Amino acid sequence: MQIGLLMLGDASVQAMVERARLAEAVGYGTVWLADERFYREVYSCLTHFAAHTSKVLLGPCVTDSFSRHPALTAMAIATLDEISGQRAILGVGAGISGFTELGINRRKPARAIREMIEVIRALLQGESVDFHGEVIELHQGSLGGRIGTRRGLHERGTGELKRDTGAKNGRRV
Image (tube, rainbow, N blue to C red):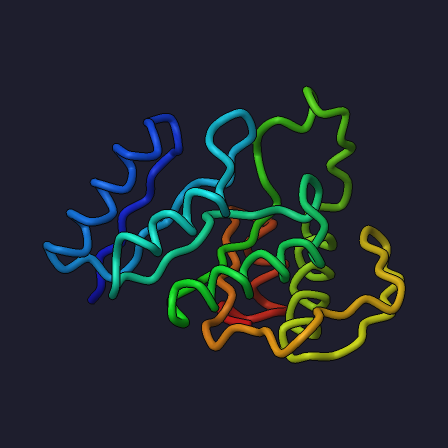
């Protein structure tokens, strides 16, 4: 069994780096940073963690498709994977915070997760993606250069949302 650390992002970046280093030193397998609005920007922090650790997997927990387009998420996680030496891991979900403040209509969250996973998976496999879903659109999008990730995506959710997306997508993408 592996133990992971989840941080909210409400501490200074330096304090979180120290926590990530300590987690790695005592044998934790994963360091997650919550992708919550109005705290520290998740991918910038994770990149900083990568520079100060060498073994733990690093990822956002969880990124949603409403506040960050799946193509941008694919680009960010692939870049983190490259910088970290293939230690990136991606948690995806419906999100829970900041939508009202940002004026985002969080509609059809289960559908959005399924579409997000489909788009990210295709982009990380190097495909050119033309996707017209119920929630997500992408017009001939592709990631430049040879970038991708060897780690899976971890779908997160609760209740009906978890049962709906988990049954269709599995736990790892």
